[in-house]
Structure formats: structure tokens, C-alpha cells
Image 1 (cartoon, helix red, strand yellow):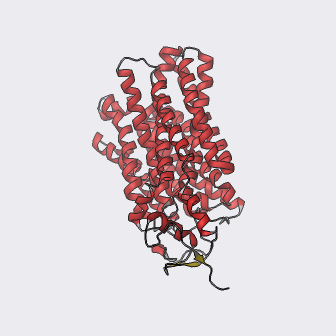
Image 2 (cartoon, helix red, strand yellow):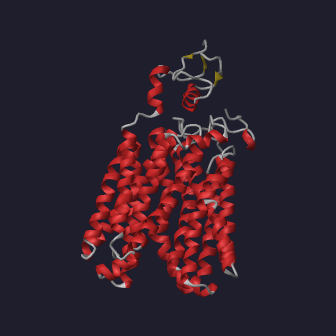
Length: 461
């Protein structure tokens, strides 16, 4: 069990984790805290995506080719993975607030490096430093956000955190391109660094200090939790779903211009339409996941490959293409709160690590989806072929979810043997535990409690 003082000193008596049911804050303070967290999400969303609209300017400024400059996008996405799997585990024993402060410091320094960069190497280094904050910020932030509200609003709280990311796509990326073309691309990265400072101030002033995730397993076992069937299914589904969607999105600009027939000036507005779908999907998906995360994700996983295929089929019809682009954002991003909530529910004892790993899965999925889409185009199947590869990846994600539905979670197998009893107790093995849920973890891990069940004896009043 986690030491109640942790590495950051004694924690507040109302400290909680994503597994608790009582909200830490009142509704008003919770909204302010979630708003502060979403500012950081907005800045991180800008960092990841804004450079796609500034490739020409950055390439000219650094004296590199477009291909090399494009690696600044891919380099960021790949650096998210070690940030999630190496940096985040080192912070799991910290107060979430302190951990996020450190990660935002990485973010600010990385973007300041990018803004100042006199050459390509330093620019890439700045991108990598900023990316190290990405997985941990959303991973730890999701657990923290869920802990600030009542149990029936946790998916909505997670959606609020990700709202900053969606707003970055709707407004921030077009605005960044506008500013970069007029004031220079360096000014965009200085502005993003400033947003990071504002997020840091909001975090310090508005977000409460809570304790680390309760009942954390030892770090080595936390990595084993990632292999639990339900957790692994959620992670792989995240990768497949977003790989499918972003494979299509990456090549949407030439499709809109060369296949659909839109002018170059219309493309930014169509991307705003897509971003609006992301924003609404995030909100609606969070509300639906609060009612039933598993059903919500399953329905959306059925709809997504249909939307992608129809988008490819109507790519020559401007009005229908605009509608389908909106639906792609709506359906695709509506899965985020449910998938993240599903990971938190099944990764007891390692929720923070699993949450951050799910963020890494987003980026790995994007890399897979873009690679498959690019290979299809290079093989001569045409600009619309990413719709086929994208739908294929989404169908794989659907298959994983269906398989998970047919497999009873570990917890479902164990709860009847435990009589659904909760609270402090002693396992019949003689090993003292502070919470009956800890026995569930030990049974799943095959530790000292064996035989597939453990009777929990409630202590005398």
C-alpha cells in the first residue's frame, strides 16, 4: 500500500483516487480545476499539430527540406511513448499536482527551445523535450480529473481535460498557421510556451493537492497490469481506432482538393468543421460513457469503419464529403472518454501508468495508420485508399472489443467468491490487507493468495 505521506509530504485528508466515489471538490471548484487542466491540454494539442500547418515556413527558416521538417511531427509522436512508459512511472508516487507541474515545466522548456532553435538539431531536441510531457500530462491528468468529481461524472471530467486538445484542433491550429504566416513560425512556439506558463499558474492556483493513486502495486507489477486482457484490449483498441481515423485525416487535404474539387482556401474551413466534430464528439462521448462506457465504445467502434468507408465512397461529392468529415471527427473522438474510463476501471493498482500508456497508444496508432495509408497510396491505389486501410484498422479495434465482451473480466470471476464484500479485512492466508480490493489484485497476479478465491473476514466493530 502507498505510504499516506508519500514523497511529497502528508496529503490532504480528502485526497482520493479515480476509484473513490466521493468528490474532492464542490461543483464550482471542480469546474475551475478542470478548466486549468484543459488549458494544458490545449497547449499540448497545439504543440503536436500546429507544425503541420507551418512546414513550409519552418523548412525555409531552418534551411531543411520538407521531408526532414516533416520528421519534426513524427519525432514528437515517437517521443510521446518513452515519456509515457519511462517518465510517468517515475512520477506515480508523487502528488498528481506536483507531477503535472514538473511535466508542464518540460513542456515550456521544450517549446522555448523550439522557438529559439538556431538549427534543425536543437529544434528536434525541443520537440522531444516537449513530447516527454505529453503522455504523462494526459495520463496523470485523467486520473486526477476523475478524482475531482463524483463517480457518475468521471468520464465527463476526463472529456473536459481532452476538450483542450480538441479546441486546439478547431481553433488553435488554424490560428497558429495564420500567426506563423504573418509574424513568423518562431512567434507561434513562443506563444505556445506562454500558454504553458498560464497553464502552470492555473494548475498551482486552482488544482488541489491530492495524494498519489491509492493501493498502487510495485512498479514491476504495474507493467504486468498492462497485460491484463481488459486493459490490453483497451490499449490496442485505442491504437486501432485512432490509427484508422488519423490515417484518413493525414491525407485528407489532397483528397479534398484533387478528388472532391474544393479550392485551397476552402480546406482550412473544412478542417475546422472536422475539429468541431472532434469537440462535440468528446463532450457527447463523455456523457454517454458516464452512463455505460463499454456499450458506448462498442457502438462507436461499429459506426467508425462505416463512416470511414462512406467518406471514401462520397469523396467526389463536395456537400456529402463535408458532412462525412464532420462525422469522422464526431464519431472518432467520441470514443476517447470511454476508452480512457475503461482503462482506469480495469487497471486498479496501476491506473496512472495505464492511463499514460493509453495516450502513447493514441500516438502509436497514428503512426501505424499514417504508414499504412501512405503505403497504399505509394502502391498506386489512389488518394482515396486510406479510407480502406483506415476502416480495416477500425474493424480490428471492433473485433478486439467484441472479444473482450465475450471474456469475463477477472473481477467478475472473483467477486462471487468474495461475496462482494468490501472494506478492511484479513485474508484467510493470514496476509493482512487494508482493502478487500487488494486481495482481488493479488489473486489476479497469482501472488500469495492462491486457489482462485479468498475469503475476507471483516474485523470486529
